[in-house]
Length: 618
Image (cartoon, rainbow, N blue to C red; front, side):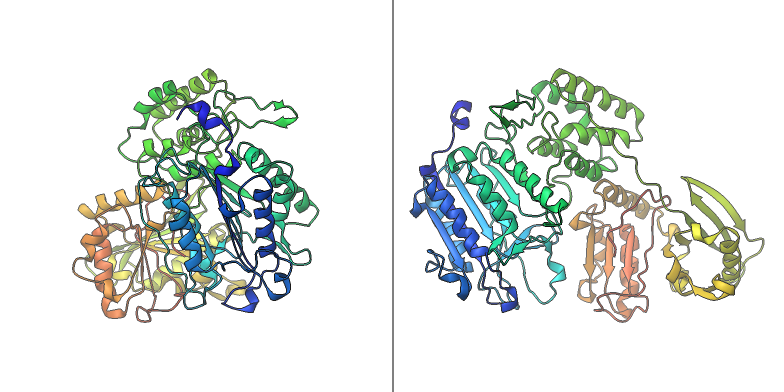
């Protein structure tokens, strides 16, 4: 298929659609959502009025009794799991079409990977059956028997994007539809009514979702045929409309969109050779450039690093933030290789004149400790953007300074059991300052007295975290419960009520465990501490003699949440130490697994210098 063929508008007769609007749910009448069914019908009417054959627009609605009378399609099939999945994965893939529209109005939740979960009308509390929108789109993007059909796909979700874990009474489970290699020529555009964590506002008085209401107004100014090429400008206008309403207190959400590339294989917005943003015929053109082959050839040698640089995930997120583009729904990086990450970014939507790879590499260079590599990256960025006529890359933000921490180190006295040589120092302004060292071995009671004096002398209000470096035998010491006379009028105060208390076992990072620890910690820093694989929950049945080997097999996990009973705790700790896992959390009493919020958690084996660490632990 030639570029000219690809850039031609899609014939409405070659369009198909799945349109869903759910007002009434089997779960509860409290889920009633007046307006969703009407929104679905309005969207379907726009498609058919623009020339899409009615038999190719599949409308599934479950209206409320009070709204059903005004809906011409209310007697059709209901949006149950069987009906939706039969249409989406069996009947529609067998059709001969060029463009698939998916529109959904109803409730929505996000799973741990930020995938949008859309409950069906027949969902229940015990089995909250749902469409996993991102998983469905992955299925539709995959290569397979559809061959050249449905090369373009547009999904629109007028639904909330709130964390499913907040809905504790629901049972979503996992919805996947099979894995197939992605087809690079099958292109997708996904439009969300709100950002991650936001509710999608419903207007029950007018019987409409606020997002769909604004979108339909703009879509009616065009047709399905022309809207495909103008979809991004249309969405930008809808975003501006809601932003204006938000300024007047009439809205709270902000739509977001995610695209792969444009129909030509570069970006969704048009020919990548045009990098200006001048209006044409009264309508602004938004052209998002991508890298040319010369830029890739010059960048390739810089991508062959032994491991991902620190702050890689921060750089990935920042590239989307400064281009006003929605971050992909999944959490974490798309791949563990720098070359794969840059190719993923170049296939996505960037700011006009600013491919996402440029700010991504600029951020890495700004935070890299290898000054030679960083300078080479900066030279490459300047060469590429100048040759392609792109705007200067903004300066990345500096990392937030680490909070002030007080460190207390215990070293066992070789001649007296239960006594320790103690040293205390302060970390602030990226430097260490020795405060006090004991001139004789102390027991924990003596250390408490010395710590109380030091906190008083060093103005404890500046200290946010106290880190205890201890031998393995002191892990049972309840440091967070130490009561020190540091309150008003020397009133005793528990450390854990005022400070973040961290316990570390640096002596347990020797031999192979030290190398494993370093590998895992570097992985955590590169992935920003947000990758869903970073944390592993562990219960009694998961503890075995092979646990240490299992935990060290890969860079993840870097944190173990040990919800284990007392008899299994020692085995778990030993396995975690052997595997070099940097962070572990378990119940302080060591014997009450199953509680939702252990108080307080123990965090240990922390790195010697924690640079803006964002731990995945609660």
